[in-house]
Length: 244
Image (cartoon, rainbow, N blue to C red; front, side, top):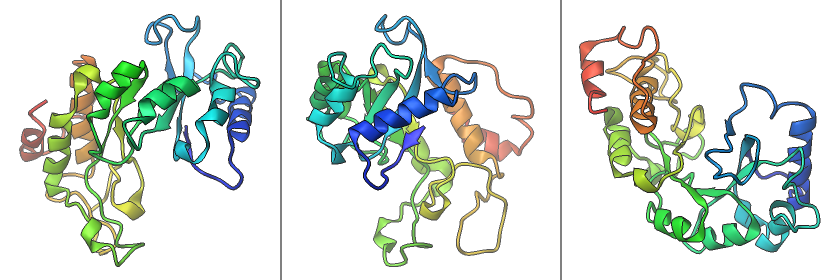
């Protein structure tokens, strides 16, 4: 889950969110993404559900430490609601602060931002999660922000970001985003349309970005199998993702 800001959000309320997710059995569901004890280097005897905390910097680290350090007065560590928590990296010093506050990792969210954070997180002992994305175009909701637009270049922009990832020091990779259509970062299937509000993936198919990223995921984790129907598209599309 991606915990977005909400009114009166605090370290205590986020702790309540974790408790709620556990009690409602969301985090114990087989489909919920968890990290195994092996990945966690023996820090826990059971798999932990993963949570991302957006704008975590808006709450003092001293407050987060109450929830995420074992000695915190309202800690989740060792409790049924324990979780693997990843905060938002905005500055290189955040890695050290995340470690002292008990976060398990840090993610960049903003595409291409400071992959040099990898070495800082290594030194601090927290996991690093850089984010990649296909491009950016929020003019449907912010028509004045033409300068912020990043062209997809038919997937070439995303492939360049992937090539720059410090994979040897990366615990995982975030994708911004699956369906943030209003910011033009979506990768979910997009039907060909004549509406100017959203771009489709021409000249490729509706599932082009899912195919491209599946090839990258296979490369990243060492998978070799592809889903049924993966190659049921044009040769030009398959050629465009052949690098992985």
